[in-house]
Structures are given as structure tokens and as C-alpha cells.
Amino acid sequence: MSERKYTPSQKLIGMQVVDSKGAIVGNVKDLAVSIGGKEVLLIVGTRAGGEIDIHWGDVNSIEDVILLSKPGDMIGEKPSPPLPQTITCGSCGATLPAHAKFCAKCGSKVR
Image 1 (spheres, rainbow, N blue to C red):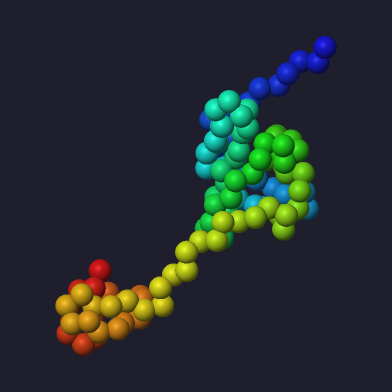
Image 2: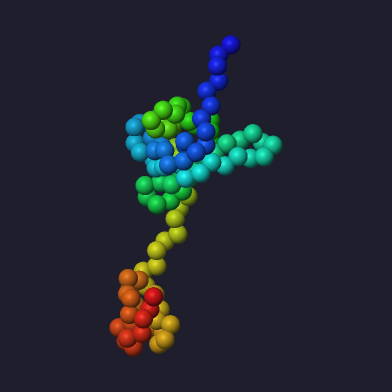
């Protein structure tokens, strides 16, 4: 009978996740467990700033990194909401670039 190897969840948090082609996917942010369904997911923060869920069955091995059994293009990333291109001044209603800190029209602080 082979001995089972257990890994504490705290060891997984922060570990780097690498796909089957050797590309870095991101780092583990958390684990999710379905009650009764016996399903475990890794919640991974991606390099692009998004977040993906990786099923435990897609994990090939855990050593210095978490190695997946699939290439990264087969793992879907949740799209992050698009950043606004413009903002509106709360004082005068002027349309300003998204990076503005003060209104160019009335001088009010925007953020």
C-alpha cells in the first residue's frame, strides 16, 4: 500500500503555478472546497491581474512550484473589468482623462 502525501493549504498559498509548457500562470491566492461535492479548486491570481479557478484534477505535481497538466491557453482567465478611459468631475461635470487628479475646468480635486 502506498503512503499518501498530504500538503497543508498554508503551504500552497503564494506558490507559483506553472502550466505544462513551463509558462508562469500566476500565484495561488486561496483554496476553495465544495461541501459534499469533494471538489477542490486553486484560486490563482494571474500575471495579467485577473483570477482563475484551477480544478485539483489539473494539478500534475506540487514541489517547488505547482505544475499543471494543461497548457495555459486551455485555462480560462476571468476577464477583468475594463478600465475607464475618462472620468467626470463631480463639481462641474467636465469630462477628464482617467488619470486626472484635478479638474482642468474648475480645479476641483477629482480623487
